[in-house]
Image (cartoon, rainbow, N blue to C red; front, side):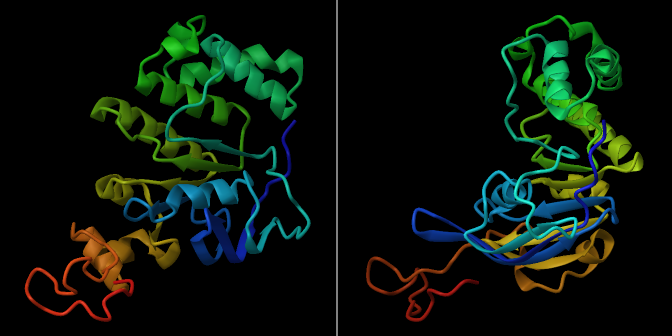
Length: 266
């Protein structure tokens, strides 16, 4: 059983608040099957992970609307989409049972479970661990299992939150190969990354976020060649980004210049 695609989906003025503070602000964007790989970048705290969770339907927007596949009333995430979190969330079961449970939840017939699970474990290089408790795997192997579990249900849309964070180069390469393979097979990838080199390798288009807003969205080659937003340019140059705040001491910055009026976003 394969569910209908949730694509395209649209965010229109979407906002999210946490603890009385607006952390996603006026997000307006549409996502379609092409380009295949969208990579979201930005400094820590930019709202990248939160945006993925919002798009996946893990919570509603506090303002604005989200429309999946032109259906304004669609509230729950489609079975044709999946998400892999930065820290894998695995069942206390064997590796193959983790995949089988995902297939069961997605509505695949019982007759398909074992063959599908075995097939995706082969693709991800985890076959030899099929009977191993999932939580005894290394971090990199757990991340591959989380990705295998997501791919097993044949999603049309796959959200990946920092899928290679904390992985060594060899493990990161394996995950990147799986991402490329999935995209080549027709899966729309929307992922976050802290790694600009990875973004250059994988992205078809790049979204740059800062302080809960989308500041720029462009084809990846154009974005890296000549970003239009000054914050995006500073970010890819390796500069630190922050909000300038008035000094808590004398109202004067370290160079003796007045900090009056410097509480705006830079």
